[in-house]
Length: 392
Image (cartoon, rainbow, N blue to C red; front, side, top):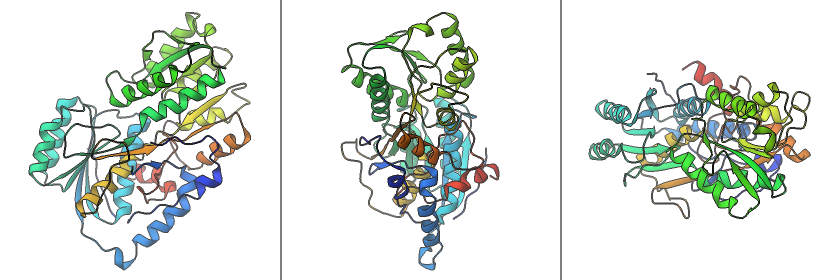
């Protein structure tokens, strides 16, 4: 992802146009591109949907398999599967979306992908549990003429395409904002996600890339932080323990990595003053940033980590099935599309206005990321996504 400026205005976000062809789905069981807000994309999405409804949009229909092997109940993973359903419906080229969405390990997901191969799908979009363990099944998919697209994390299979958020730059944006808010000195409570997860590993790389330029910033509890597992209950307990130990009183900033809402709630419950916090664009966290009455003195920044990679993965699979030329992002590995992060904070009027534009989709779960569309990769109306999931 290319670095984006905090000064990006709401008007600039609203000007983003979505340009991909757009019809049906069901199931149960970038060149680099910025992730705009849901509200900013509604008009463009409606235009794209209208174009897709034209007679010239008639195209071959496909069956697509979707495998998500973990994080059931996690806001990011649920939204990711939901956007895949929404994009399959909006595309007009998916006759059936066969989704396997469950908590399992790499071996279990290997079995799930083989089940999709046996079902005779034309393409498989999946969020991998491991970068290499799925390769045997991916090779079998290639032999069967099935397109494979990994989203959110990458795999090493040479024939699979990878489409995910640039987590290194995500971390670089948030870390620099946080360290600057602290005046370049002080102690940061460094909370992370799942140990070994490629997104967490990339974020750690980006965080430490920036840390090198801030010699007066200290990290606790260790140089490698503490892992929350991206689990809300675990994060709340870790925060309560951190506060009870007296360590919270000695820090000047927090790196949240997607669990900001839970951390802020725990601090508020303990009647402690807030310190600057960098997190993702999770709805509940952004709402806290915009509520000075209930969260007085809270300064924070949200970096987009769009779960719409699910929908984008459907689009990429269709492009490949249709024989379209797809080009890897500049500087990325072969067969890799990286998506740009955007950072906004609540320390300026412009930042607050842009954050408010994100919080605009009715019925959106507060644990879901707010960036509900991706320029050039999703064509559904973001406002329809929550209803699409509830009705699926």
